Length: 245
Image 1 (tube, rainbow, N blue to C red):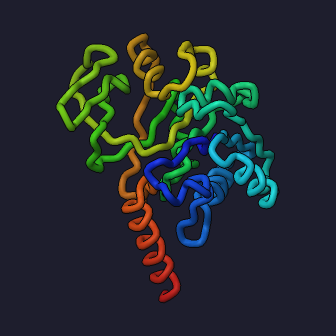
Image 2 (spheres, helix red, strand yellow):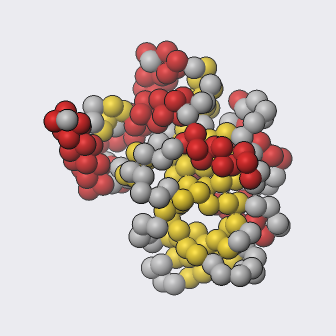
């Protein structure tokens, strides 16, 4: 599932006329870049949630023939439902036969998605979250049992899902999840909400939510004009280096 329903408010005025999913970096829209990466990693079915400029996204998917796989659209008509609400609203579209990816639409990543999926399948947690050691105002805290809490580095606030078991370490979330279909039977929240809320609740109840370190893989986010410019410059530089080889 690709999360593409948001307003992209921090990218205005660009997103006044264009959904963030169709912003181009390196001549490729974010939606197509992520869809192609997921398909290359083995996904044979895509679900895209939409709200802001939804018809543009629907038309783009049709023009790309669903990126070569069955592609379904989950319409959030009244307002974006955020990550957790979006997954819950799209539940009817899932086959629930195997773990699935959940991927933010504003992330460019060199992460080996197939390897992340294999790691999840081998370990069998409720969720596996891509994380990195990059600086961030919000961090996830892990111990040997998985997700233990959250940290706000701006004020030092800590929210614990449960008592720590041994040493802990903090990592920034990288916008990619692998989820076991069991998650649909465990979502109690309603309306618009971050999926981090049920993650914290379920971690406290004993469910394993594990980190997957992105290592040195490329990671770019286009959430505001400065980051979009940086991502475009980085991808242009990489393309230039490839062309010179």
